[in-house]
Length: 282
Image 1: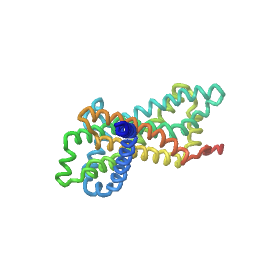
Image 2: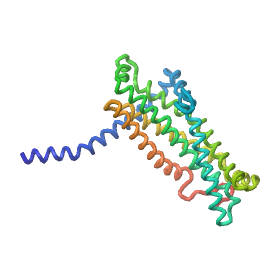
Image 3: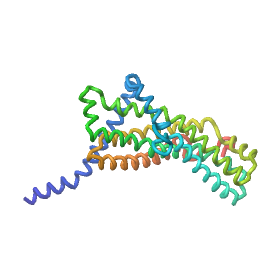
Image 4: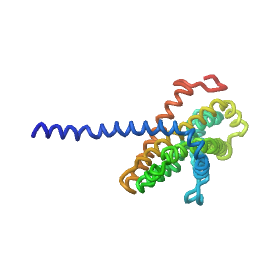
């Protein structure tokens, strides 16, 4: 009896670790299958892709209830970049470098603030919506019904959403990047009284098309990760409505942490551990 008891206790102790590895493998398989089914989804279900693009960008109801992501990205980017302008100007003014606030705007907004803010907005607005939609379909047996009707559920439900997120994130991110630049310029020039010519000179000195391209690539990769994570948690949701809510929370936490880690890795890959400043060489 003692040996059997020890065996049962050991099995119970290692079961959480085993379940974690099983879940990791299931999610990895899900991600790979979703990407592989993208061409088929675009060819067969392009109407659903267009519908998802419309829902992601502009929503299906009023701006306050069910509105699109474009307003959220614009507002969040503007608020975050306004703080960058105000606090950045104040910090540089302490060391007599306030005219170089334009450099900071071009550097921080482009490389870090705009991609991260857009991804957080996408996760909170679009990602949780994907999790809730797929989770509700799972617990109501709608996904099983699709499979029973010979409709491949993964390409139809997940690959179409991933394609829509890929297409939607490009204009959404460009809107957020424009809001970042405009908000920082407004804060520095109008609120702090810096010369617009000085600000524009240093801003244009540092801003390069390569940085903007890398920044856009960051946002696209973030969107892909967010979509995969949220759709996987919704697709495998269990436990009724309560389980769907828990899945949405887990997906949001996982996607935000993944974006933070991926942001560091991509910054190192694009600009190195000791990045140089275009136009300055330092």
